[in-house]
Length: 324
Image 1 (cartoon, rainbow, N blue to C red):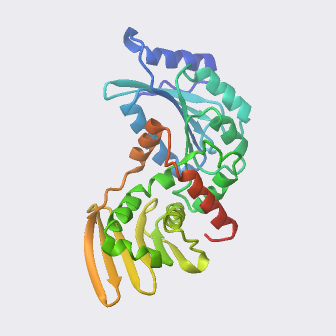
Image 2: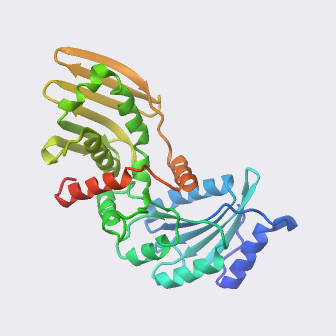
């Protein structure tokens, strides 16, 4: 992938972007303006790979905002990106210590008018909450990822504390989208009346996950479905397994126990059901979605589970009373 070099003149950047978009004398359709922010150096390469994946599949104007100390302040490089018959452009800026209004002015100058603007926010909002608000109020939707770092619980707290986070258009959290495959396995298994009738007895949960955001969302979802509070004494959350993945889930009562092991390489969920003295095993299809697919889903759908705000409220209540 060729890089045009480091430039500091916004007018020149705009000229290069327009030239890239109209390469060969043909004006190209652009699906969206994708604004990507990252402020965690250890995730920068991971984010860049997925951004370039979007650029190869969809005609997109991508502006990658680097809030780490690794990005040179207010410099940029422009990268035309071609793939799958589409043309995209990626422009990168180092914006550490830039005022939110300055960043907004930059975007106003470089985004394509009358094209939807989408925000993908990666990292913490600590110290940059005003920047998040400045970017998110123009986005439809705003996508965040509370998971993937050792501070995922704090990231969740920040999401909940953001103004209007529980309003009519909360940000889409990829950590919540990731548990969809697990939800489908659990819902499908307990559709069987032989097991579904036991749900009313469930009073304990165990969840192992490589990141705690997914575990917290799954607990809240199960609490909503089963109409249970699942306080601290009834739940064991363990950070274990692959990052951003649920590895194991147990639903139990005094009379029964259901253990689900999610084996991603084989696309199977292995179930062990203990009811009284009987033990039964089964394997069910399990199809996890990678982050790139989740980003695409969020970008294209622009909406989330209609119960998400309710589940986020449950998460907020649990975190406020110290149930991590």
